[in-house]
Figure 1 (cartoon, rainbow, N blue to C red):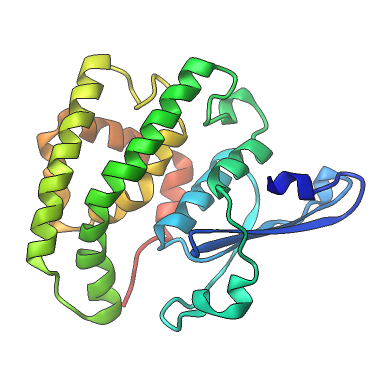
Figure 2 (figure 1 turned 90 degrees about the vertical axis):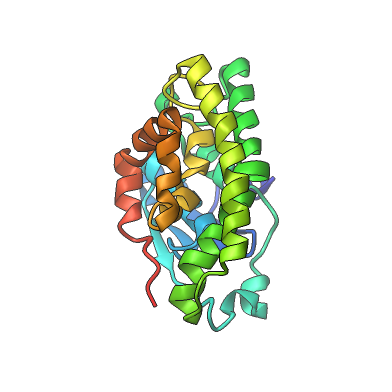
Length: 239
């Protein structure tokens, strides 16, 4: 675990990267108020980096963004790759910096709630994200960065897959009548859905969510969080 590298008795520097998209680098000093801002190497326009920034916003930790030139493949360069250490950065941030029970988006003090958070985090990673990612790239990233038009066959297949996934979400939320996925509390499971959903909501396929009233209401609650509204102002992908 990366936290073992840090010592409260002396200055320490730790660098960690997630999915080749972001790098966190911080210096922890003896006195908490002297702790330097967390540095996130990446950009809020990329979902994995945005997820980490959202966690930092939620726990109220100061950070600064160091832009990485993905078009120039800077993230593939030896200098950047040398910083990489495999880890689950978002969860690490939440465990390290949560100051109160209200900040505990992993719900680790409650085994049952923590299990539900884990379940829906896995659902996002293995079902929601794979269905949504092609829509994001074809309709948002490629047109903005490469000047291409969406491959409608790829998009159509992804929309169908996403519809089936949303059927499951709608059934769950309508049955449990909870405000969020894991219960009546906002958690890391909800936060994980934010970055890709934000981008897909900017495409013509945002209307898909109109057919799922419970899902749409849940996403509106997620998007309305001050931390995510603040972050979303920096997430637009421009040509």
